[in-house]
Image (cartoon, rainbow, N blue to C red; front, side):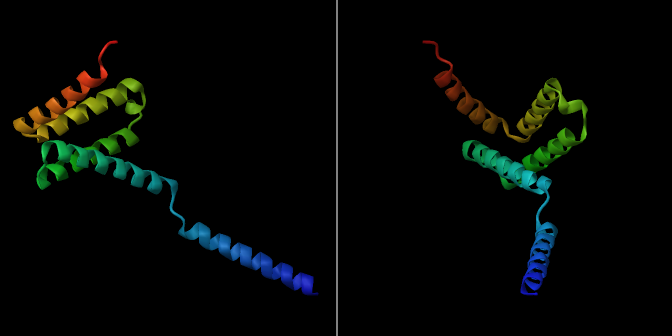
Length: 122
């Protein structure tokens, strides 16, 4: 009799724990979105260190990033390498349009400094 009661209690405990775990766990896409947002924040912060963005520019860049994330996730047209490359180039053009000419100069000078360092022959 003790074994039956213990078995029933164990089954109830495990099924209740499993039910709560399923109910409160986050879906996989939420975790991926959080990682993607963290990566975008890192990129925007790095850009801010280089060119000193204003708050308005940061918000515009975040909107651009989110817009292109939605486009890439929704359209099958962008699932190919060429489609993703074209989408990324359009996104970069829009982000550059947000920057002032002086900020663009600073960004290009920063990029050029690293191109010379890593593209040497020898």
